Length: 621
Image (cartoon, rainbow, N blue to C red):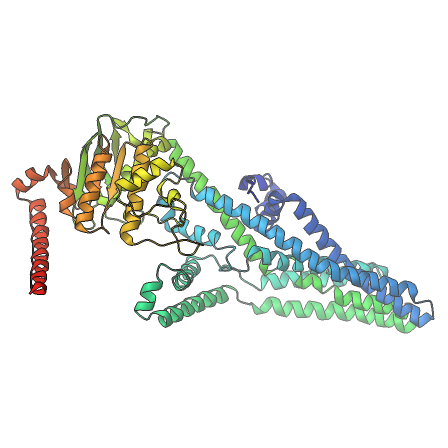
């Protein structure tokens, strides 16, 4: 079934002002308004069934009282028995029907909210919002609201919520029945149970979305995913970590439950007041009813009806807005808050981001001018007043120790982040003044943590589509000639699916970059593109890649100097800045950091090669 967008969060909130604003701001109202905006037809039917199921118990009480009266008076029993039968059958039929309608409505709401969450998470232009602690807490709550981590999934919660509302309607309907006895009876009995409902709500403290709770939730979910998902399976079994992981999940889950228990604690004073109110009101009502029954003012059937109705009105105390609604409302509210925050973040970025086209850029150069950048929550900058010029159409290799800022430079170039200060200029234009989608169409990249899509091979190479010839050509250049069927799903979890070796996956990711170049990308970013290939395979693939990307602006990050030396220029980074810049020959002649690292790696390779040769010689002898 296709998913249809639903109105934005602001469209389900009433206008501001007075009582209307107070009601509209309650999370329960937002939840019920979200039901309506998700599927009006099912929502109307769901509410109609709530009312019908709530009224039926009052009808049953009246029918039983009528039967008791008929027996006492010796009247015909056909009508009261028929009435009891009809009400009883309706009660039995409507319950499973309501359950099915609620489950279907819950699935509709869940689908729409997850659609909105996906759109919201993708709205900001970069990735900083996905690594911000405050946003991560909200994303955790909103992402997990329907996965059984914070409460029952929504399709189950709808039944629990309906049960509470049915009880409330049933209690109200039976309190109304008491008006046939005396005008004050519904006020006395119903009011007492309503006050008890309020006191019970006041006796509980619900605050389950604190940072501590959400941290525990993330840890429990992570332990669970490690146990049931395949990527970690090899290490878990090899190192005998199954029991350790089970114990860890149990401990994390126990911590989560304890934190929730502490957040939902019962206060004693409201409970004492509730007991006192019920004893006084119940005593007064049943004393009056007993007195009238003894005097003959009310018959046996009426006594039965009013007594059952007074007891049935207790549903007012326990029905209504229950715990399931609170948890479901929290989840829905989290999704809508994420939507608003992401929209605000996207709008703020939109103020900075211009609309200039990046077509045919760069024609001259890309320049990092006095760029400083620090990740959110970090005090020390990763890049510190970086100045670097990348000529268009050439290749630049970036080397340096871990933490020097190499991968961060790439993220800024792809505009996944913006500099804290300074500018990145493309042909003299601030990168933030270019249309971000237009610029990203000009950039193709393979990252260290490239994505392995559990999709057919053709979708891994060209997710947005390409001709079979383009896919095959990209795979051939990347050296993935052993992968022939473009429809093979790259996951063993599917029928006829398969998994690939690390080297094969890296070739597929390289093919994805090359396919994008064939479709118009002019800037190629290669972050450790051949880390999982052997030395010969690396040299062969990189030569092919350089040939295929001739004329593009290529930025290479690698720890292998046999690859790095092929670049036109080499940039050595340290502590967020450029310390050396030049060609391989120039830097070797300089005798600085690059030359020292190159000689160190070359010596190690020579030793390993000599050892292999000696081993082969001994084997021959």
